[in-house]
Image (cartoon, helix red, strand yellow):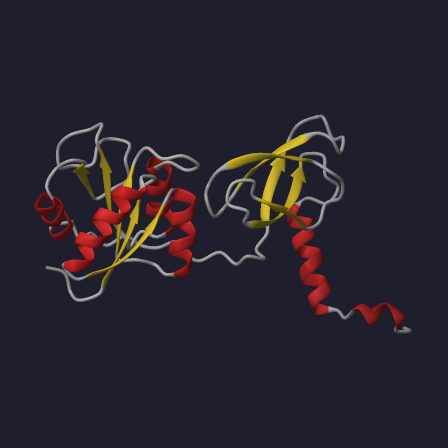
Length: 218
């Protein structure tokens, strides 16, 4: 039996599965929330990080394979269980970033045993990323026209999407087409006259010398 109100997030695209598991696991002492796919689950995790995540593998929008990979990287303290009717056994299969595996259709008692015997390996969390922290994107194509494309990988859901190159070198903003996270980024090109290091030096100089300094007489 879990400690009272141990937090659990159930992720499955089938409402009947979410409802059944939520009711049963709430009765044995878990504080249960649920989500219909991986993207909804990430929003739930951002609102409140659960102790345990139980996720189906085959879902629309963001599969359990993707969700578990993101959770392992960004929220490594969460204990994770993958579930599916397409595999058998009690161990997470190769390529699935989960601490345990539950075969759909097995008994609730089997699920509870898996939940209670998950390994407690300590995994270090990555330092949190500020929403305003720049994502530096290297662009080495010879096509420097504003309509040329770059690839941005969202730091929230880890999915990649294309964005037009546009113009300018400094801070820009785009919204992830999948999770709608705001991404601040800047372009670094091989032929830049102001590469990343020079830009950072300029920022440091600007912090040391007020903008009014150029008005001083010598």
